[in-house]
Image: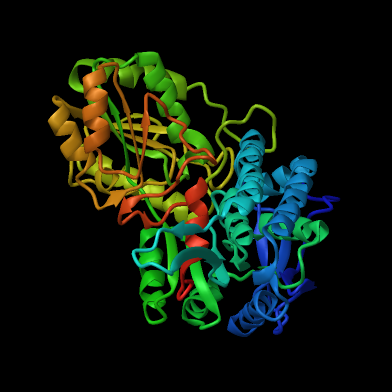
Length: 489
């Protein structure tokens, strides 16, 4: 599928050069739809990554990126954006091949991911300071915003394009340099973006992309978090890994942004528009085969409409086209790897063994390939089941029946995760009450698709620290310097 794609790279990008690992080690990148090897990339270790950190550090300080003008940084980001737009099909084909998501979703991610580069190209020239009225005559108080330095960006496989652009564009706009560590399942998309950054003309060392297998992932994370030359870490991934990185950043009191796991409630109250609720459920749950951090995880359906909602949802699910995402019309592709398939199957089996009812699906689909799992609906969930308590990250709808608003909120908030939440209601008073009480950083109200460049993306509780996108996305990569000018009289 990638034969002849000009953006396919087989080396990492460090200090403006395409390089392999010093050891010569490589690892294979496979297509989850069919197991075919798409290519090999360097399996880098601590020593290789140290070179990338050094190059980013030198680019920031010695080569003067930290003193570059906002206008110049904006111009480079605009060039990068234009090249991404020009190469939409090439990037999307790489994404579909290595992540398994349907091509139409990859193109959608291109639109979303590119929009961050466009947005932060504009925001680069709006990183304003402040003049503060002094309480003392003869003084002037000035606050300036300055880039923090080198930013280590560790990104996931489920959105291999947008999670890079959302972080890197903000960091570059602020005047930081970056070392990007993409997920081992999807490094080819990251390298394609580096290829376009090179073409856009970013100075050497400003953008670095290093690749590694799982073998070296832990030591690389530890190095990025522990290095005195790295000023900030931004990570999107599991809560467990995020906590580990948080601890590792503590010794250096390093700036850190974390976008971690969710356990999103999807509440449908009896006043809801049923068709809109079902459409919202489909959009929220089955995008990228349920492998999104803001995917609905627990479906809380009010007693009076429970049965109708489940039947309508099953009807819609039964029409989903399953298969290789490179084929036209496919809506559900494979899970990313064997570990993810095993997890989804284990969660559903656990629910069945504890008395839940599988109303639809609940099985692997070997006729499509080794990593396919049928879209599934499970009802009669209880609080001792894995599906009730943990994020499944797969195409499984876990339905819980509730009677009152208070009960729904107690269930929805009864978790240490607080990334996204959704609810459907046409009762205006209820909308304001639930929006106030729901303990998540983002809420979709009568809407199942909530991501937007202009909005602040992030969670509360154990779902993260900081915000990405919006004007607040710059905050992760700048610090405020206070200047006090005295004796002015």
